[in-house]
Length: 304
Image (cartoon, one colour):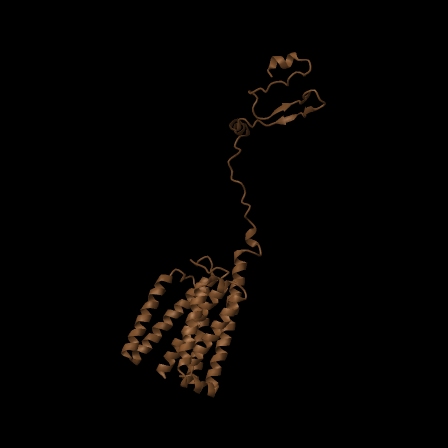
């Protein structure tokens, strides 16, 4: 409807005054009331100041040095102190890992003591060499299953059942290996392993050196040590056996520091283990400690 028809029709009141584009910024407005249509609906505009939003550049000039392009506030502040923050989850993860590791080591030491001090079991193990090879095969199968199957190590209670079977099989394998050594040498190896593991754990916690980026280098050193073990098997020299045990102890000491820093995480850690992988983390630490024990036992037995 145009302006002429609207003003000529007696059923409609006059239109409100037009907006003056020359008035920018804030201006006083006295307000008005007018009727819409033929009904009893009325629009009331209260008096007061209004803002000109059509020309923000003029408002900025009128407001002086006021900034309109500031970023909104960061609403993520304060969430770091929540009980579900990453540090809290990490601490719970570390407690689970080391509690699981402690139980594994206690079960393993108990099985080893049974093979050492139960004379009938000790003689039977020496007479039946197939038992040692069977336990080795069972341990390898369980390691591959736990490493490759995510559901096997994440679903409760399947992960604890599989880890318990692995720990029992590993204890039987270690018990079958220790019957060929003196009980005193085995106890010395247990004490040395505990001391070295504790010292390396403290070093991994306190050190600012990040070992988590050395995964490729440690893997190369592992295959080099395996090739050296084949050479020792061919030459059959006691001095080569001692050198192999020393190099293996050094390598698995580095692996223990590496796996410990993966579990602890932190700002100076390049990689971290997921909090859901506490069974896999405990398995890694357990294998590092067991490998240290076997190499130290071999080293002590060769040097006696």
